[in-house]
Length: 220
Image (cartoon, rainbow, N blue to C red; front, side, top):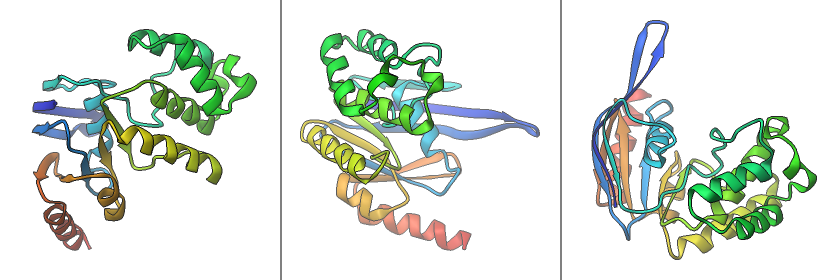
């Protein structure tokens, strides 16, 4: 289970701090995959980073009793001065994973070849995303976080990403953000809607879609 208790997050702007998450309290239970809907700028990506632990809230608590991935494809926590191989070994140690197994999996899956031994700062955005996604699949998490897109790279690599992710879903839960209801319905059993820094959870995806569509109509 993951529980958010009165979580707040804001970022500095020229006109002062901008609140993104405004006292969010929610529970994500094991055995359910949850979609999060919201317009651009609603705070969906910030929410996932808070859930993963890659960012800390300004106030409130995040309680986790499960292993949680970083957002799939998110490479913001890599050290640019370390090589891809050194980064993955560091992550494997943090999560208590077998370093050699993780290394073998990432080398094969990412298809980065000799770049595994180059500093990550020399990688393109796509190469960093390949490394991050492969590393996400190499460590067995109980909950996977997905920010909008699952696959990266060309069509063949995207299919490879989808196949690997679907295999993980057979034993793990998903918390996913998306603008597309078809994607939410494919992967999720529940949904929530972010609006004005708040997260409203629904047991029924149809109810979440109706509420989200009402938001879109008001903004039209």
